[in-house]
Image 1: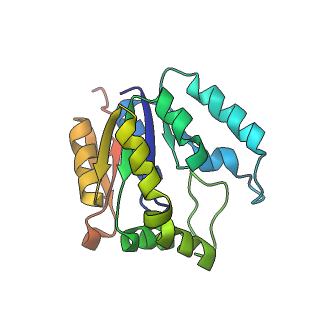
Image 2 (image 1 turned 90 degrees about the horizontal axis):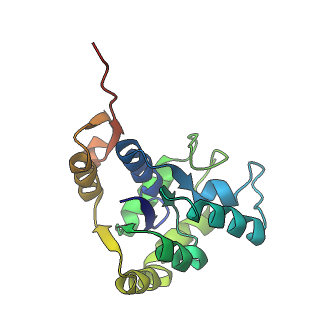
Length: 187
């Protein structure tokens, strides 16, 4: 596993999973939202985005977090591993709502609300985007891991690295854990 893409609905936890996986593997992490969005809530041009993505894809090792559906084919061509967070809409809506008002390393601004348009995008994701993603994954010939719950993703992370230790638990009623690689300190 050297070139990884992480896909799934907004709010599914792609970025949280990607950060934990980057800690475990030491792979550099790139959030597509940070490439596309500017801090002033405008976007870079499609050409600039494509140029920056092409530069990342030339590297030997990476994790790329995000959908950006028109770029999935080129990323699938270059990756060796794919993770798909295929969670129920309600879980994704909860995830998106919980990050409102919080500073995140995968977004250049703090979301102040879960606006109606974005909420509808999440509701429509399973019918409008997921079938195409699944079809591309079925034909890509790469290692694809599909998670249907946060617990499955957490279990994968726990088994992915022996140093992967739960450092913080949040929403424990939903069984969601954030994992970090705890650095061993020499005596």
